[in-house]
Length: 253
Length: 225
Image 1: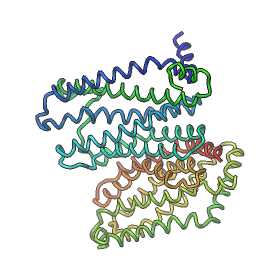
Image 2 (image 1 turned 90 degrees about the vertical axis):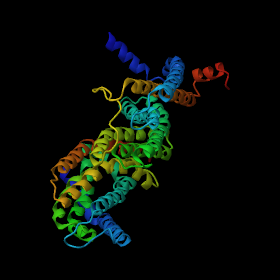
Image 3 (image 1 turned 90 degrees about the horizontal axis):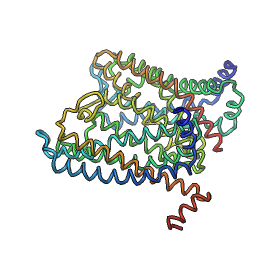
Image 4 (image 1 turned 180 degrees about the horizontal axis):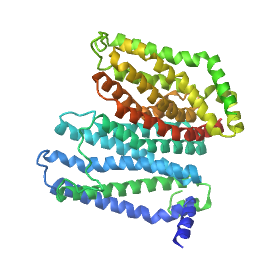
């Protein structure tokens, strides 16, 4: 029973129109959640969380840096998963998803690198250290750039979709290998702030705001990705009646 | 069937001598340029070893491989042989694997033989030479395999070189890390077994995945034509 309905949902997801009407309420939900969580987490983290006994107030950069770094990886893996689904089931929507995740992922990766650099100056004493996790984030940025360059180079939509899906998949398979090899190479980075198996080493007044910020960042990503996907769908389906009707109803022409 | 394909690829390799000689010449030339540009970093004294030599060697190997990859499928793609091979082959997977193997024979394998010369130029300590050769032997298959994916996707582009570099060089990073580290360990007289395992693992994972991805990439490129 559940299997059958899941299968039906899966096949329905192939239809841009169905996806579009399904996600209409989601956009509002993710948008408002992101706004509230980010505001709450930022005020809590920046104003109320206690200063670190070693790093002072500079540790507060973590409230931007950690969520950005987590999102940077998640979005690339999301692209890889979308690419896999697109290549196997030939779903049109997955290319829309890749095109939506790509620019956001690049920006978030750049933000993680930049905020890390700003934090490194007072903490490690230099703007840039060739530390393991810094380098793997930098390589992640280059992986994004590769997909971006490939998409720019192919004019035909269908082939662009398949080529970028393939490369995103290959990159995703390589992410763990790159991570471990670089960690082997050199690490002076802080250990991960969150792990699924261990209790955080920070007091709860410090990591709870971080958790709120992480959730906020993910909601923000959901909001942006959905928004971009929906406008891309409208553009691609601009010859379809439902898309034109929707645009006219919303007062754009 | 497989034998015929092997013979054909082998003859192509022998007749197009440029594809074998050019990358090697490039490797030797860039190594020379590096030594000339930074003479202090390269010590040729017999009792000392150069600290930057392993990194320079491996970076230049990566770049040479990148240069060779650009022409990996190009000629067969332009002449239509590639399409015929993929359509006619009973197992396209094997056809792709043979091509990758030949590409490795003409680049990585020859580089292994050049290790003594390169080591001499860069000032590697002589005790590290066997480990360096082993590192190249274990690591360069991964370069050919992973590079083949990028080459298959970009073969249809007029100027695919830069995009090929952007796609492939990040994937080369693990091989570079363990390959260079193996040479450094050998120079310091430490055990190189961890790096041997790591390089073998990377090459085997690449061997398992790359032919399929290459096949998918070639199909995309053939449709682009």
